[in-house]
Length: 412
Ligand SMILES: [Zn+2]
Ligand SMILES: [Zn+2]
Image (cartoon, rainbow, N blue to C red; front, side, top):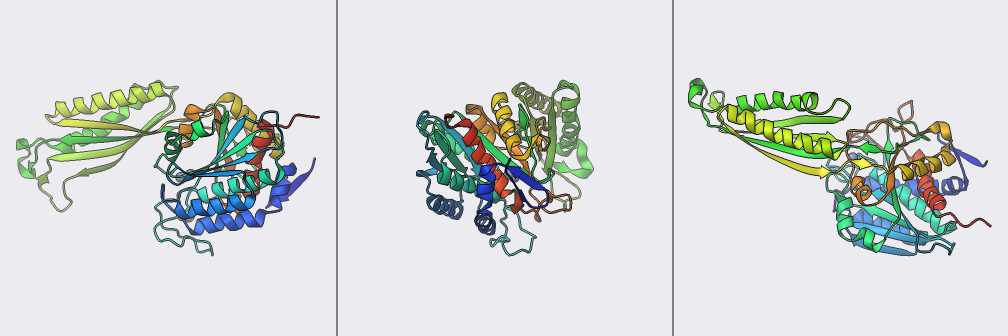
């Protein structure tokens, strides 16, 4: 079998990879240009324009802009004609983070306070690379739907595209996405046939007591004391309400009450903010109910009141088993069985590709990018992170191969 080697140990099989490797410098240049021009969710004006230009050069058949504000979709039709109505979706995210970059290479962020700290510049470049290969070769039977989405980092850009009619306009049979992973070696791909990422919810607990003099606390209802009891009590939910074989995390990460300069002023209110992570809706429902009951009851016990606001931000990212098995077999055809992890441990992080998987079958994968000697191993959302350009052709080839296998030309 034909195979091509890139980087230290990335040996990849197949025509798609060797073809894409021939224009690796161009995809790298695009990736670095995007890295130098980071933009926040729904503000990816430069990025979507740049992607639009690149897709035109690639020769895709159609480009649809303004879906979910700054999102865009490219269509590429295969040369087969027997299943012309069949469509498969591939998705990349385009946004950056409100983070100051501490790298000093030539392509570092040109915008202070903004940085591609999650590698979405690389995801976008990989999908453009796949577009070029698919448009040049068209060895498939149906339509490839390439989805460039805005605002993954907390803006629910995937939902915005869906609400804008993404899947009515482009009724794909299944959809695939991938995220670089610094803790996995380049040339490796990981996924599982179920939950990949957790649901991420936000909880706000507003405690109202009665302020007063710290020396005359008996005249007050101290909301700081109530907050302290709530912080401790909510940890009983995971240990005493959630079944031990189910998974959940409750983290109260911020607290605001009083003034640091006011040594003897008991404030009238206190606020706690945190996050809840779960994989299943029944655990999510349980945690929401117990949090609300417990916080209110603890507050009442001290003569205070607590208002609990529970917001469901991103649902859990759950692969559908047939599509996960399919994607794993396509990944295996590229990198070999020993470099595909098919039972990847889920992460308690979250991902808005979950919105697409709520309405379409599909799979979300991790693509390794961290070398053992340190290149690409700095973790996501770190000010020294950078996408490892060595994996661009593999990510692009994986996208393209999903299309070529899912929409295979009839054998002669
Ligand atoms: Zn991120
Ligand atoms: Zn990300």
